[in-house]
Length: 139
Image 1 (tube, rainbow, N blue to C red):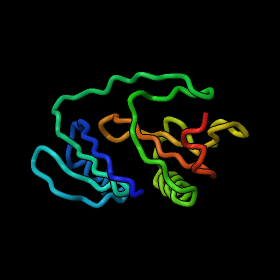
Image 2 (spheres, rainbow, N blue to C red):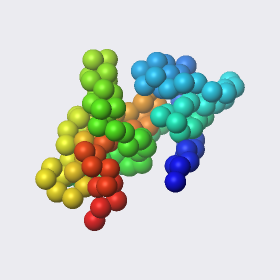
Image 3 (tube, rainbow, N blue to C red):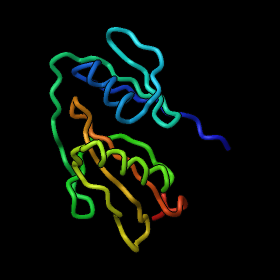
């Protein structure tokens, strides 16, 4: 079965900052755009940054594995080599992490490498990877 891409639209306060963050830092290919929105290719998925002047993030957190996980958040489940490369690239770029790269649920069902950070508009992103992808929905 072939996985279909998801689509996510999210607010940003500054399109130029979004373009630099998603296109420059994360390396997302840019698709169509206007003066109000930009399409990006996030690991084969379509995300769309929509300009919302004056938007302000409302940080909400939920405790998970001893960390305050921001809600809402979005991201991609990567392969372990992709996750390691992204974590290294973000660290080299001096990205300030909300939750530093680490392995969550170590030795338990659902063990995963994860990291959290925010875009310039305060949207939280999580990228994770599993040594065993079969653990993604394990209970």
